[in-house]
Length: 196
Image (cartoon, rainbow, N blue to C red; front, side, top):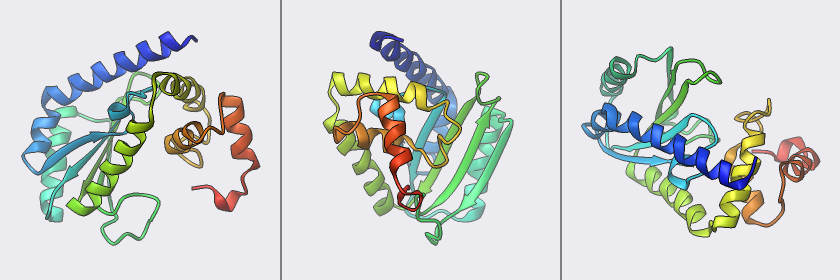
């Protein structure tokens, strides 16, 4: 697959994600707080149907969070939707806040994975800043390289488990890898305990 094809796929996926947001999702979220669409959508690095967003909200109760979840469920009619409470920061591999994992249709068969984190302003600022720092370092050549690697790695059985998109971004931006093979070799050489 040529770089132009990867860029075109990203553009198509972002357009589809934009339709999802404009179809009522952004409006629902906006009633509860400030919406930050992030991840691969923000970075123009989409290789599959995955939409990450943060809802910046100074205070939200569990009942409000479930009311929000009910509205989102009514709009998107997901196949699966699940809630996680990490406000105490027990799991430091994910943001401190409340989470809705939304699966619209079957993943791998045209279905969307929508991740919604409801977070405090200070947490949100750190998450947004992280994405902005990555965005500021991207050049057209680096974006093409990341898209080429992600288009392979997103089908790897360890993707979203021991392998994350952030790991790919970091490896490419730090100049350690050029191909998916380089990336996987680097992951395999890392001691298990040092992986995120």
